[in-house]
Length: 338
Picture 1 (tube, one colour):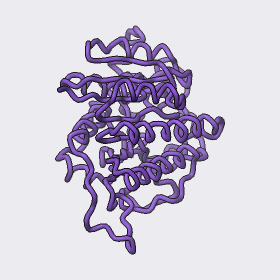
Picture 2 (cartoon, one colour):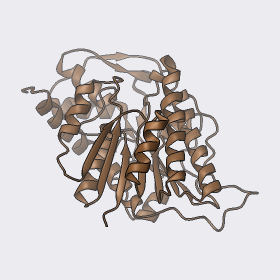
Picture 3 (spheres, helix red, strand yellow):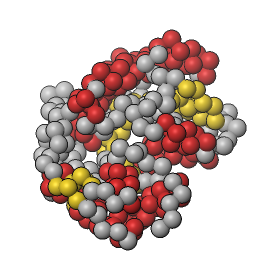
């Protein structure tokens, strides 16, 4: 029997790429997405239009809709759930906090309850590198304390990890949290730096360079994210028999619970990132230098030792290759001639 995998946020950036990969591996996929207007809905529909497989079924609704989600769990009986649906974005959380509670807290509770009541084998869910917040101990490790978030978005993702642990403890539900580090690549989100920079440079508009360019980001190519998730599907988290309550390890548990960083393990200066875009486009960017934005951190850097040890894979795509692939897609999708 083919495993049945429920992917929420299937029309999203990572969800779209992951759905394609899992279908190629022979699984059945049920996709959920509410196609909200946080960014261009047509881009989400275009992604869905690229998925042509008889083993893919799509439902357009919000995971905050408890009754509909319960009905879907009952009808479909997924073996594995991958929750990528969330209200994303650090800066937007300053403007619209309630959207984050509805999707990231209420919606995630509904997912946990669905997994609990329908005997799901494993829940894999998106967390974020933003949970590291005020922590400046680099590289960021899943074994570090992350109790000082600096945006509501980060706080909701930390809450997801706590909620998942509770269900792992109470009901034996195996849960795996994924802290993504600045994901980029073809079909990416229009609110992310690479998309914004590429669009502005092509249009001759200035780009916003925050913290006066003194930023470091562990940019991670989407194919490396997808490969990591796929391998983790095949590796259910086990209890850590050496875990001790008098010296608690935040990254593991006595319960079937695990958290991983998924990052390139190679931070890049923001100015180098911009120069790589300029080189690929053959256009020099106009730059507006601005202070660090509320909720942002100056540097991210992923320790991926646990990921590499457990799945024998470490993200490694260079920004030169990744940016080139994105810009090729961007020019083709928007029918722009260089």
